Length: 76
Image (cartoon, rainbow, N blue to C red; front, top):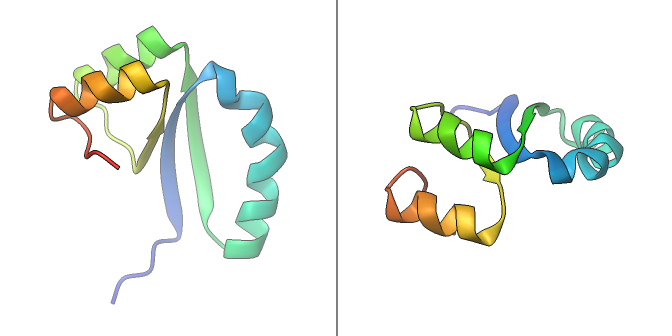
């Protein structure tokens, strides 16, 4: 059984302040290292469309819906 020790998070810039506050506590409590890549939503959409991958994408609903339609992410 594999244990995940790191996660790659792709997020729009709007979440930066929240994650700066929350992620250190999450990492200490879980032992999971979270690598976050921030960009404006439009640029993040282009990066994902070009094939960049991550374990988690946190974007606005319209972006999530579009990426789901494109088959780039799994709904839910």
